[in-house]
Amino acid sequence: MNLILLGPPGCGKGTQATYLVEKYGYVQLSTGDMLRDAIKNNTTTGKIVKDVLASGKLVDNELILQIMKDKIEETKASPGRIFDGFPRTLAQAEGLNALLSQNNLSIDLLIELVVDREELFERIQKRASESASVRDDDNADVLGKRLDVYNQETKPIISYYERDYFVNKIDGMQDIKTVNMLIDKLVASGTKQ
Ligand code: ADP
Image (cartoon, rainbow, N blue to C red; front, side):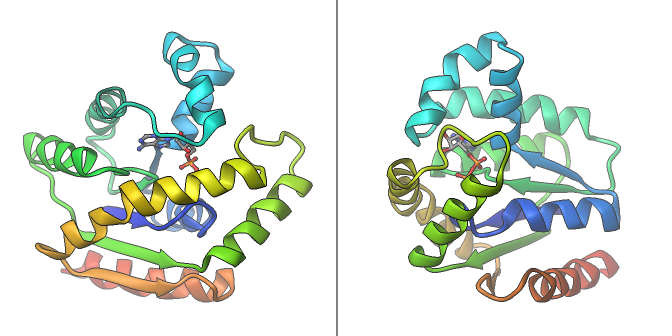
């Protein structure tokens, strides 16, 4: 099962991915988490991307695709992968197609979590106020930038995918459990095929 979770920052992709990891034993491939780990461990990649993340802009497609290439190969034995926060540009979506076909894999399910802009601001502000280690990019200024980047660079990949696939839309304004259940239904019917 290869599932792509789409939707803006704060829509709940990470929360839902964690649930699927626990329930189905899938691996969560979150480029955001990978980049934050690299920064924390002060690796070469971490040094390159630190300021980019803090600004809310996107990291270079080539670097992201190199990281993903390694991850897809590392997770060959996994029963499933949840792509969370990747792909974020058309170039990444095309790169992912190439990586999957090189590994005899395909996209099995696409889900878009739909949440309005006002709610996203509230959620990120809440997350920043509750979290012990505040993310450099979880503040109103950078969130505004991240949402603009999402609308300009990431949103177009939804219509790109809609040419070849069905993109399941879920109202991400509902409570976490309801969203869990709706995603679960899609995953369960996708797994049976
Ligand atoms: P969110 O979805 O809350 O914005 P992420 O953890 O997915 O958070 O991403 C945080 C930041 O990491 C992004 O704003 C961007 O700078 C960088 N990043 C993550 N994934 C990608 C990607 N696929 N391509 C380019 N940059 C990325």
